[in-house]
Image (cartoon, rainbow, N blue to C red; front, side, top):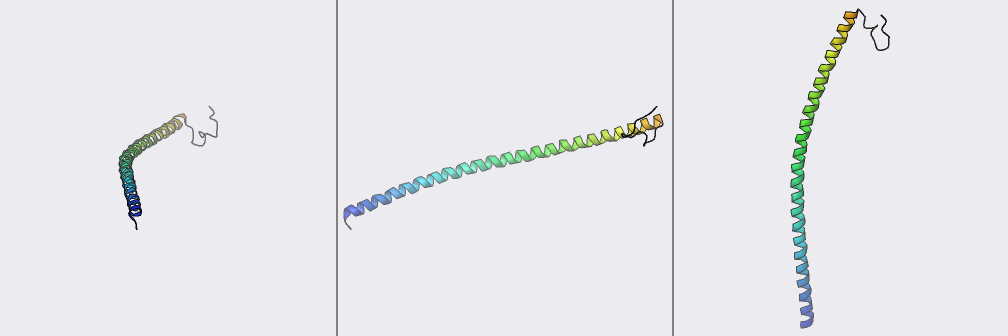
Length: 99
């Protein structure tokens, strides 16, 4: 092998080594970026899970309050029926109340 061919081969190897270094640096940057995104997503996930738990508590409290309201309305309806002397059948949504 003559020196010119050897020199050209050496230059090709140097170019390939530089290219590999660039690729490696690019992969390192990509990896850092992905790690940062994963950390942000994990933080956001934790925050969202806390929000979901809080919303569940609020919804449960609202459902309980509505159950209490329904119970009170049923008791008021029962009292009104008794006060008016009307049976449950006479005071149904399908019938009209006659005085």
